[in-house]
Image (tube, rainbow, N blue to C red; front, side, top):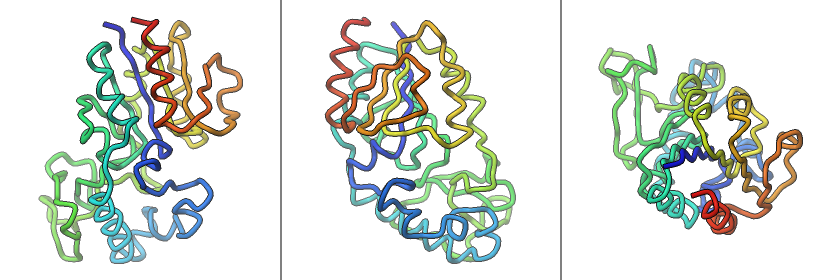
Amino acid sequence: MKHLVILTGAGISAESGLSTFRDNNGLWQNYDAMELASLQGYRNNREKVLEFYNARRKNLLTVEPNHAHHVIAELEKDFKVSIITQNVDDLHERAGSNNVLHLHGELRKVTGSMNPNNPKCIKEKPLDEPIVIGEKAADGSQLRPFIVLFGESVPNIPAAKKIVAQADIFVVIGTSLNVYPAAGLLQYVPASAPGFLIDPGEIDSYEALNYHHIKTKAVEGIDILKDFLADKL
């Protein structure tokens, strides 16, 4: 069974109704990223950062996986599928995908402020329950979202590199990959692995690569990709 590695970004979740970050009308057009989603911002005003992420957690309850999420899950019937996602939602999991690596954290989880990557502090918390000041993690530190903030390292990058390096087929959906370290994952794709990109825009990052560009949104492009993949079985 061939190993299909799929890297997803905000574009796939946008079609379920979740706001992107960097696109026109994205979250960072309306909010100050350094104030609400950075380590320094958290140190300056924890309550404001918690309020921002509590709203995002609550909003996740209002959306559902879209057609693209469901088709990706169905591909497990014919391929070994590994998903690496820049998204912090759980839509891949809700659609039925079983092997999902989150690069930037998960909204459904919380952790401690002292050492966010301490396994003893990471736990799930219902999305309709806000994280409040004074709520403690297992190590006694303030509970916070299990999200990689600006200014923090991305701990799952080494694991992502290993997965990408084992790809028989590599697919990118809904991300321009202009932001590092995630953009660096392209360097680890085997030269022998066919590459596909699903995104409606012109993306300079892929010009030097021999990728088949399916220039549509994810919910339409995923069926085109499925037809291409039928020839790879």
